[in-house]
Length: 132
Image (cartoon, rainbow, N blue to C red; front, side, top):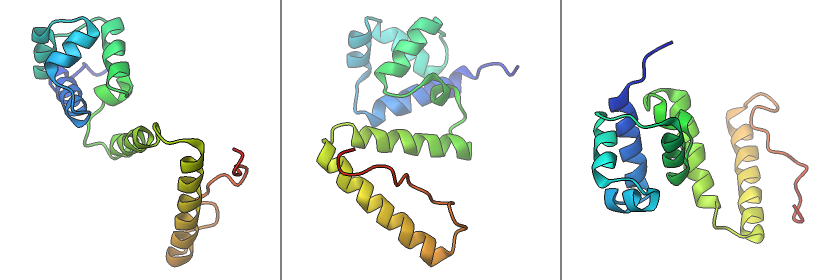
């Protein structure tokens, strides 16, 4: 088993916090931890309990796998994009989500035609209708 890279984890925490426009002070206050601890975590000089780490991941609307992963790994970058898309979709109502679904289906169908992807390579469920 590979040892944890606390500097990378700290950098991942800091980057995610900044993406969400949250200050260290607000994060510390919301999680009932010290601002000093947040700073130490982000610099990779302090570790926390698994329970606190899970709370941080939840607070940052991500998961511990993303926070512990190498951000240069292509699969990690893909998962981060998916997380970012989910964040954008969180505040949409059913009608807006349905419109996004239709746009995505149209985009994928046209992309498949243009680039001749194998059938099913860009599949979006056809089982969803406007009633969801």
